[in-house]
Amino acid sequence: MMKGYGLLVAAILALQPPQTVFRTGVEIVEIDVSVMRGTQAVQGLTSRDFALTDNGVTQQVESVMLDRMPLNVTLVLDISRSLFGERLAHLVQAGETFTNALRPDDRVALVTFSHQIELVVPMTTDRQAIRSALGHMEASGSTALRDAVQLAIALDPRDRARSLLLVFTDGHDTVSWLTEAAVLDTVRRSGVVIHAVRVESDGFLDRLTQAAGGRAWSATSDRQLRGLFTRALDEMRARYLLTYAPRGVDTAGWHSVKVSLKNSRGDVTARPGYSR
Amino acid sequence: MRRTIVAATAIAAFACTQPILAQGPGEYEHVAEEYRVGDPNIAIQRLARWPEAAVTESVRYWAKLLRPEQLVAAAMAHTELAAAILDSLPHQTNVQLHHAQELLDALAARRDERERADAVRLRWYQFVISLFSSNARLDDADRYAREALGRFPRDPVLILLKGTILELSAAYNVPAPPSPTLGRSRAPDSATRQGRTLESAAAEYRRALELDPHLAVARLRLGWVHVLAGDNRARDDLTAALGDAKDDTVRYLAHLFLGGLAERQSRFDEAATEYEAALNLGNQHQTPFVALSRVETARGHPDRARELAHQLAALERIDDDPWWNYHLGALDNSALPWLRAEAHRR
Image (cartoon, rainbow over all chains, first blue to last red; front, top):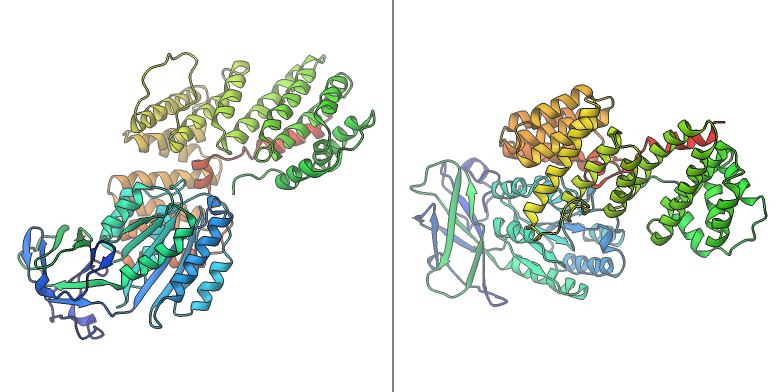
């Protein structure tokens, strides 16, 4: 959605893709939106198809882009001791399949976490570096999921590519310093969309992805990981980037945003708002 | 990260796979001497090969014959073997600890050795309780803590350890070990249970502080429990812990916890100051970087948050952070060297 604190000013807009509309000195809000009908992404929508309110005030959606901007994807992968064995092998396969399906101008980073968080490969277009790092992952230790999400968001390059986190975990946080409230606040302040694939049910991931306008998928077996990683990438590709210049909502603080469809059927997923 | 016990995995594997060797009549004494003046790891490995019946027989026989320092050495060989096999052969762990206790009983029965036996037994309990706590075996830890408090009811460190077991129960959100004095009633919900367990932990820390008002770790833990409970006394406790701290680990955690308190109260500037202090004391640890990165985000400094994240990513870290040990439990790192030294002492 919004980059940084959500205020995009004209000075940094020279690099914008042509379909995005910006005006000098005007704040522009970007909302990253997914529209699904069942398991299929709904395509071909235009600005006229979306209704959007900011703190309850109807806004004029100025542009809708079926997104062709490159992706900055950070894979945030749990390698705690419960991954030991076959599950880790399936995770490596899923990561490799995901990496192979990226487009040439997409970039990807690899963050792993147990109790210790590591930026294993910084944001790169070098697929081989990612594949090699995936192959060297070893499972051990406890789980610092919340701390890892915070670090991955902080590491996001915040350039004009679309920032996405794909988080995988098979358990619950056991050792993070940060509270859930702190991490969700960071998410609301950032523009990063977060998807999650999990093996066990974890309420935090539901709240995390909901706050970040993403989705959470649950695997009932390790063999499903590859398919779910692929679905996550498909979902990332099929998103719309709505932009609007907020009108009638000048207050600082949290802005609640609601997006719906006017003329089509589909489930809209977007982050619930932004901090200004 | 957590277990620093001697060559635990190797010994456990050795115990499982090696053939049983015949033991001569003096072999058990040799094991005790090897532990005492030779290589403790070799002594533990030799002991690991013995069949249970032979060990039981040897302990009974040699408990009457070994010199006091040999009794301590033998007790510690059994104890360290128990620690080494805790993951792989948990049912054998308590057998080995039982042998250690038999040997300590024998030491206590000797003329003029009662004082030494008590000192050794107290540190031994502290070590064993921490061993089980750090492996999330809280019921076992609690059992030994109760037993120890039966012998040393006014020892502040044991009372502190009892509180630690309760605090860990709350962190894992598992039911606290059952109290023999409480009747059965309807199980409370998870949050209520967690709150009650933390209250019980706080009560133990207060008891420990009544006996030793400058026990910094108890003050630190009481302060953190108060942070979690939203109790206004947290700040005073943590500041006092900082004043009483005798090592940088306590100071590091006290600053971290003061930062956590300020952060929970949305006093982000103060939180950043405390986290910076923690970072200065532990600039190889992960947690201050994570905490500061988060607070800088909240303060509206995303570039600084990113810089901290990159600093952490570039860091050559050791696999250690006192926060992890605090939160998950850790071995009592002072007890083991003390006990080993006691085995060497004539």
